[in-house]
Image 1 (tube, rainbow, N blue to C red):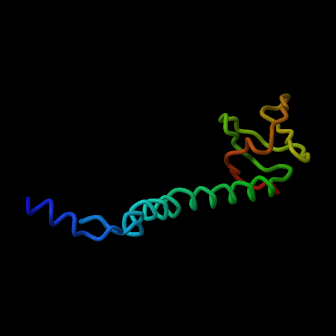
Image 2: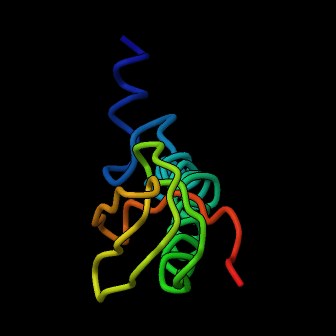
Image 3: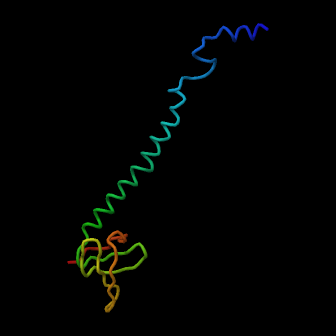
Length: 106
């Protein structure tokens, strides 16, 4: 009986043993900060580097596409590239499909 009486004497605003809401939100905030610095920020940096690389391609550059096609750029358009895959084979690809810029032509 004395235990129930002691519990009734607690202040109305805060129950016994419960941390403040700010302290309980700290682990969630910490997880978001870790995700930002370990996942989101490096991915954004990689996307910017890829966009810069795609902007800088020019005629006679050797590239590798996302599909693994090794080619040489023959003509540069606004959103596409005409590339030579073999002596008599030219194809048109999207700029965004360039994965690697192997070397710059002269």
